Amino acid sequence: MQEETFGPVLAVLKYSTIDEAIALANDHQFGLSSVLYTENYRTAMKVSNSIEAGELYINRTPADPYQGFHSG
Image 1 (cartoon, helix red, strand yellow):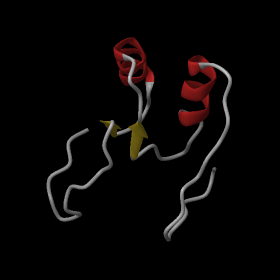
Image 2 (cartoon, rainbow, N blue to C red):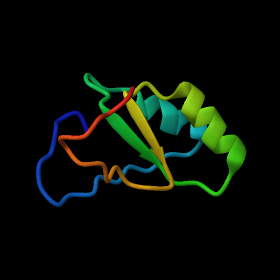
Image 3 (cartoon, rainbow, N blue to C red):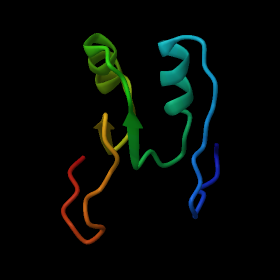
């Protein structure tokens, strides 16, 4: 989970609490973008305020064109 992976790969890592998941997600060198899937509004708000990444996608994948504008 510490190396940038190229290819059709989905990294999966188990966690016990949302705070542990946030800590794992923030344990990075670059933090370019992240994705969160949840049905819980409070979880979405907690993660969006706690995640250390340039972009956070909630309940969708980053489908913007690579040459397109990306906001942080």
